[in-house]
Image 1: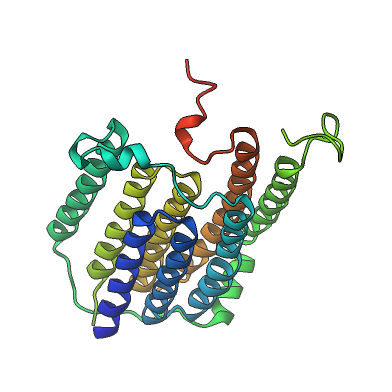
Image 2: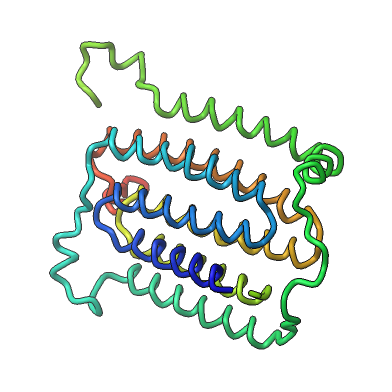
Length: 178
Length: 100
């Protein structure tokens, strides 16, 4: 129980700091901390393979990609000078709307969850945590979605390369950046 | 021991933080990070439900969500790089060419 509160607190505080930071590099690093806490929660949920995948794929691959792009673009600071001077209650519409929407979402979900009432204590059924079982289910019951996923990865890879490539017709090596 | 409701409440809070980040921040990279927070909140509730029902389906779906998140991050960041080359800015308010 204490571990649950520890990991939950780390995850929530780190996520809040992610959206409170001005510098995207700090945001990315704090999000890695949040993912580490979530990985601890997966261990508490008897899902060790998901926890390891969370660390390797999310914190190791996706966040490194983000960090790479942040450093590549070299535009770390958000242009919010004029926003900073405006009082919090007189910010533009989307900011207001987003804050109200998030608060409404929390209230609504908490209300629904507390009204459900079927809180039957700790988990009663046996956990499925062995990688063997997961692999068997993944390659029998979910074989088709698994194959479709490979096509998705291929499309994403080709799309990313095409999007990030410089247009070779309009700009050679000597042409100025567009 | 924490119950299913505890995990779901934590997931709801994380999802709301992600939603707020998408609307409040004015930086494309931070917006993409907020989307990752939302995806992770959903992953947490999938695993918690899978643990509660005693099936492997929750964990399997988390792998698919991770794959989609990786694809989304790759394509999204490529688009961000392309936009930055055109406007030298990451503020979404500067990309208004399609605004009527």
